[in-house]
Image 1 (cartoon, one colour):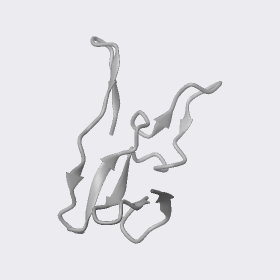
Image 2 (cartoon, rainbow, N blue to C red):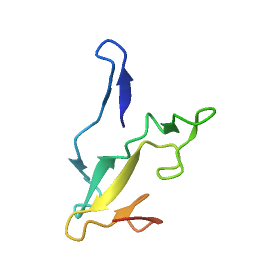
Image 3 (cartoon, one colour):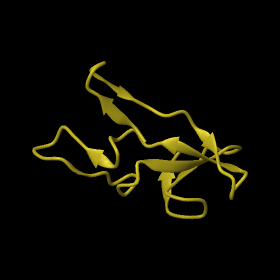
Image 4 (spheres, rainbow, N blue to C red):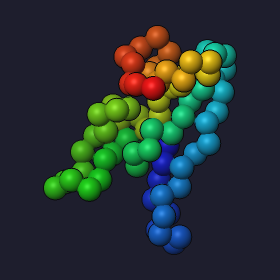
Length: 75
């Protein structure tokens, strides 16, 4: 999951990684900062990843889901 590097003053994102349990899916960085969305009046839990910081992408179709077989999050 992404994090803020205060020395470099930038957000660092993780590369996608294949899932051991679900070989047709890969874990990808949600883009939020450790499950928290910033930029609002106050920080709040990310509604796309529900605070986990990662979502899953089906390799063949590109469909995004909270977890394999779980709630879909788009494409």
